[in-house]
Amino acid sequence: MTANQPVRAAAPAAEPRADTRADARADARADAGGVPDARRLRTILTAVCIALMAVIASVSGLNVAQTHMAVAFGASQSTVLWIINVYTLALAALLLPLGALGDRWGRKPMLVAGLGLFGAASVVAGLAPTAEVMLAARVAAGTGAAMIMPITLAVITSTFPEERRGKAIGVWTGVAGGGGILGMFLSALLVDVADWRWLFVLPVVLVAVALATTLRSVPNSRERSRHTFDTVGALVSAVAVVGLIFVLQEGPERGWTAPATLTGLAVGLVGAVGFVAWELRRADASLLDVRLFRERGLAGGSLTLLVVFGVQAGVAVVLFPFFQAVLGWSGLLSTLALMPMAVTMMAASGLAPRLAARGGARSTMALGIALAGGGLALMALFVSADGGYLSLLPGMLAMGLGMGLSMTPSTEAITGSLPREKQGVASALNDVTRELGTALGVAMLGALLTSGYRAAIDDRLHGVPHGSADAAREGVANAVEAADAAGPHAPRLLHAAQQSFVDGWQQAMWTGVAVMAVLLVAIAARGPRATQG
Image (cartoon, rainbow, N blue to C red):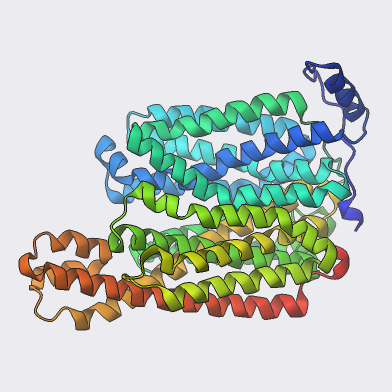
């Protein structure tokens, strides 16, 4: 497609000089509008992937420090959850507007500014004396992340020649998919061996490395538009995303029929409908031409990422309490147990472009979806408290392989469907889809697990004291805590909770299998055409 042709990089002002003659010649070729050589392309890819890793690691890193923050700030659980969630809220809301502004103002300046803001906010967060300062720092970090994340992919699509672009996107996709698990592991390690405030050292170090490499090697590129910036579309899109993400984050905590939840849902839906209506009116001058969703590539790629990331996030929600409350593992060991799935996913993301080149994007996506669905089915069939980790490992590996194979061609389908002057928007759409899918998957599979657990445990608590039984009904972690005071009833209470958790697990996993089956049929019928892979 013509949208996949590399964008010629504009000459950046005052580009830092390279340390070697080879680097200087590469800089000269890139600044003159040519394609950087292979060595510089590798450096560019390293820079954007390190920047992306900083953003992704910060999404999940604070989850391992909830109790530490509550004690340090004297904060409620609700406040702690807001400290974690407000980062994602700001990131998701600003992705589309800031991605579009990066296309206009220049991708390198936007990336540098985002890294600066993100790094400064991370330093403030690490030193925050109160919960209020921490909340403000997390909002600022989310804003910086929204400047970074879409630009990292846009730099790849606008800089790499077509024959190298697929492999580079595969690497980027692997970091986006597996980086969260790797970041959570490193965060858990820092909490175990040092202090929770050291969690912010990791993103600061990553930002420093990414900033130095970006200033030295990443060429600038920007697109000139005949139309003014779609300010109304940017504002309405932010309102829609904030409303929908708020509902998915707060619904499980507040209740799905709570006034705040229903208000957020109304705001999100009205904003989404208003955004579509406004963008149709703006047509070619829109922030995001929604008419392009008629194309198989954009629609199929977006749907696949929405579902795959939703299932991945939902499975992580299910896995952690299994490792910790059922198997009795520490947070660090539980995070380490996810690494085989993350490594498999990252390896498959790099393999996917080759498979897509041979068999087509649609076939590769379908294969990945089928493998991921098969992995869910394996976990649902064989999970047991007695079987432990080995009962899950084959399913986790199959799921990691499937997700890696499906994510890379889906990302390429999205970026390839929008014109080159809209690559920041294309990248932002890719990222918004991931964030919405993640929030949706956590809410849906988490709710299914909870309802399945509560439905199963009632019949298993006969003879258990009333107080301990009530605590156990709240969740498997509560049951483990209540068992300490249950005396001779403790073994029965623990057994009931663990078996009920497995029942809830199976209900959630089979629902995931059904969702993946529907996605497989949709992609097989209406996936990207052969020319889009």
